[in-house]
Structure formats: C-alpha cells, structure tokens
Length: 172
Length: 172
Image 1: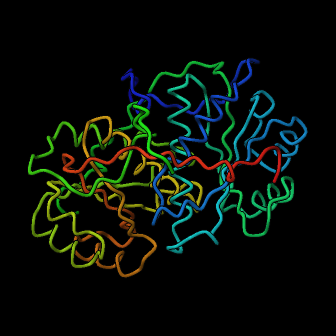
Image 2: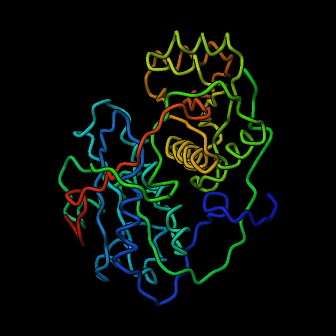
C-alpha cells in the first residue's frame, strides 16, 4: 500500500480516532444522518435507526462494554447505527443495508472535514448485549455499529489499497 | 420522501437500471475498483474479490440464475463483489466489509456520471450457488453482490430519504 493524494472523499477516507475539543455542529450531524439514510436498501426497506450520543456518562458506559472505543473520551458525538430486522421486506439483508448507511456517513464525514471511524458491534454478542442495555433499545433493535465523530486531531495520508490480485475477468 | 437536488454523490445517488449502448471505459472500471478497495474493513482484512464481467454469454447466464438482473441485457459491464471468509481476522465481519466496498462503488459511479445498481446475491442460497457455478468460483469465495454499470439512460431525481422518526438522542 503506497501513499497518495487523490482529493476524493472515497479514496482519501481514513479511520480517524483523535479529535480536537471543537464541537460538531448539529447541522453537520443532520447531514451525516441524511447521508446514512440515503443508502440503498433491499426493496428500499430502510431497516435502520440512528442513536445520536452526546451524553458523557453514556460515552463512558460504551467504553466499558466496547474494547476498542477509547476514542470516545475525545469525540464530542457518536452515532450508533441500529438494525431492525422486523422492518425487512427481504429477510437477511439488514446487515448490508446498515453497512451501506455507515459507509455513507464515513464518506460524508470526509466531505464535511470531520473525522470518523467504524466501530464494529454486531455480530459480537457481548457488545450487542452491552449496548442494548446501556441505551435501552427494544428487543427487535440490534446495535450494529458505532461511529465516533469529531474534528480530526491527526493527519493521515490517503492509502492506495488497490490490489490487482483481487481482480478477476469474466470468471475466476 | 420529497424530490430535491443536493449536488452530492451520496445524497443524489439513485439505483440506475437503464443504460445507453455507450461502453464503460477501462479507466473508469479501474477507478470503481479502487473505490471498492478503499472501503474500511475489520482489522483492514479486506476479505474481498472483484470479478469484472463483460462476456455477453455470462451476462445471459447470470440473468437465468438471478430473478432481478434483466438490466444486464443493456449493461456493458457488471462487477461481482465476492467475500472470502478465510481472509477474515475478525470472523463475522466480511459481509459488512463487502457491503462498504459495494457502497463505495455506487457512490464513485455517481461521481463518474455512470449509473449502477446493487443486486443482492448473498445470503440467498440459489443465487449464491448459481453464480458460483457460472463463474467457477472456489469453494471459499462467496458471490456477494452484483453491480451492473453503464451510462444512464434514465433520469431519476434525488430523493430525500431522511426520516426524523428514525433518529434518537442519548438512548431510545
């Protein structure tokens, strides 16, 4: 993987885990949520919910149930993407739908000059249970992924992750 | 859902299923593949493969195993995203990783003024079996999603899919 600068929100996106003390404005949160909900979903079923977390005690609680969430000490806000399989028209696709929503939010964060990172929750049972309890989620709602967001306090150059060995033509 | 124009590749993206006869250049395919491989993945494991399909007989074969793939009659090219769980460092995340790669490709298609759509394959067993057989995929490689790509021959105005009822604050 070599370093390069493409000036493209998809190609330049990196996982940002250090943030300044500057707050994230509500209008940016709104744009991030719009991006998440603009994701495609099977049959346009949109089997998702978004929990915006700003409460510092909740942040602390999340750090206690998620082993890789220490950046929540710094992040002014985090968004929990949740899946609701009861909203599915085509069973089995909610994970893909929610993943597309998360990725949209990560790319939009780059466009807004914010830093963000995808913290996996589902399908790790103890994280799912911990987050559900902490946030009081209903039984049908599955905490899927957490996205801490802030103004970047680290500079990471874009990576070229392209690998020709992963590309095949008209069959294997 | 109301109509609006945001001039943003994430918010303006729509599923495009009609294409002109114009070919898609290889440099654009390359950029789409770079976008796919720029997706985040659990532990940066990148558990994916991409099969670029241009062969018309393969397109025909795919239409016979996938019930919603009739746009392949028109699309000059399609990319099959595959997962390889044997590449996982953190078992259980390959679906999320591959979904992020697909979503990156769909957004990059908008940026390139191309049209594309996400056709679900996994976890529908008959589609998985049919695609694996048709393309000669190894046992450990799971056909995950197919993305037909072409120059758009339909105009779809962006939708505002934002739904305030799906947003929660500091808990449910």
